[in-house]
Image (cartoon, rainbow, N blue to C red; front, side):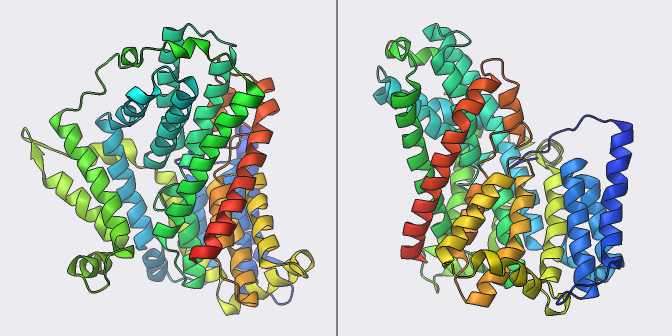
Length: 487
């Protein structure tokens, strides 16, 4: 999936049907157990639906367990069909996700992804400066991961890296390519957190907003995420320079002009128009946070919301004709760019999140009873750190969107009971579930890393835990210090 992309599991009939039976038994059977106070029968059903679908996401796939979960919400989850459809596929966040996929597919379709990476690393100031080149290369992948997704960003980054190795004479097993094969995946995964209206952040934020009615300021989140990305990139280079110590001599004579072998740096008229739309999308989504509230553009943008902004731009791009053809071919972009598993996951999460927060379900007080031994006597800071590190650990073996959603009832219950603002622990969760690059099961990009011929399992397990720990510490420090100041 995008975010943690949908990895295709090998089909094995006996285990597949066994997992299917277990998934359905949890989904529809858990609610038949006696309710434990303060849970109600409705709460038991909702917990069963959630854990049943979660098991299906982990052991089987994303699509049909999400659909089965929607049916279960109609049958035993307290939703009427019309209400459920309004809360799921009719939810603005679900619709926004669909159109974001369409928009981002256009960026990849016109070859702008490779242009973005090449543009950064072919600047004059990186010539003859290997570590500046490396830092700039990683920065381009951070941005590419935010604009597209981790796997395509990693694949594009690797293709450029192989060109660098070819020009410089690096071979498989050499320190620099081995380090950078992982560094590119690292930058792509962390970079996905940059844009709050992309896959995983949007899924987790919307789940919490559905429960609590509280939304987060996208501009402030992006500031924190950007600072984390910058510091992580710099620290990765410092660790590489003083700990990994690869041979950088071949890079000193690198002729960066040789990297553009197919003319990707020369933009045609259509690519320039698409790039302008990309900048316009980011500006319009963030503008209401900066413009005066009574300014006509602010009023207009708030009246259509973030979903309306994306639809507006997709509409204009679809209506715009270049050389007799639509700038955005809607059918082609839907077919090539929409990850339906993510759409269905979000369509299930939205109504479930709202239902789990209902007082008649009893889930919130139940979670607080469970949390009491862990957080009693602690501070909001220790709770935020606990939740963030738990998200990072779980996402090494589970779907990161699912991990984030699973932690939202815990976060909501704690904040409701203590009166603590949710922003800092919420950002801790969202950021930490992106650090999924240790095990092959962590993410599609991690699976690609483990299968890359230029890397090996020994080097991954030797270096990645250190990088994850470093990243978690950076995330906690920046989120707490900056978050406390701006929220």
